[in-house]
Image (spheres, rainbow, N blue to C red):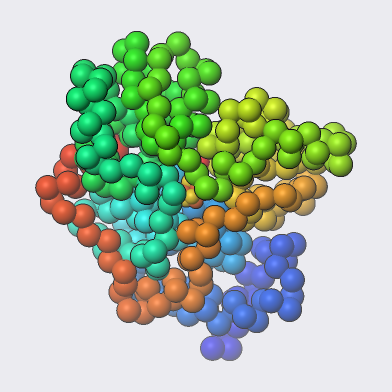
Length: 324
Ligand code: 13P
Ligand code: SF4
């Protein structure tokens, strides 16, 4: 344990800008235990950019946006993958690693977009628009992916839509992502009515107020935000694209119109940038904690399983996306 405490206090240096010293002892014991459990079980932790800094910077092996996590999941050599993110991400990792054990620390870590559409909805859309390909955001269940022609993420949606070489596609379930992509391409897009409960709450008025209160602030908006918000932003892109923008452009003052932990995680790496922090919490992402990551590894839970009748077709839609 003495060694462990030395190890976790060294890790504290990574996050001291965003985690006050008084909070650190709460995390240190779980961090040490998780580092040991990963080694004992030949496990890796994949963490989405919205995970809290003590997860993202202290126990995760692979971090990124949905696209990076899917790509990197394919190259994992460990026996066990713990997905620190939401359920659809764990399913994607399982689809790409059918032989490995994939664990999600809390089964209730869902997503309002994934909940907005079912496989039956897609079958009805196909009847209504015969022959029009279905492009499905990865923020969906494996059942929905299985009914789709190809998947996309916010990082590759335009490229995926244009890769099909057709004049019209169905893109679901995020209405705002679909409309934001439609504004960038000549391909006609038929959208669904799903929304991200985190990003739909940002408004153009928020941006107007931010520019007034924080002169010179650079506004970055995730493409799940409503189109009138994206139109007022200086840049829009996936969580990885926003992070890269901060790294390459080094705006003196920036606001990320997205989930709260994103700013913390990016701020750790860019002390010279001032982060303005009105943000919205994703209650699903926040279900993942150090404590339940530790329990997941200790008790081998909750294992993600996908019915064989679904996994083959769903994997194909994800693999087609990764080939674009
Ligand atoms: P990306 O990380 O792919 O931009 O997705 C954001 C998101 O909301 C994932 O749930
Ligand atoms: Fe789903 Fe939105 Fe949460 Fe991402 S931020 S997991 S899209 S509810």
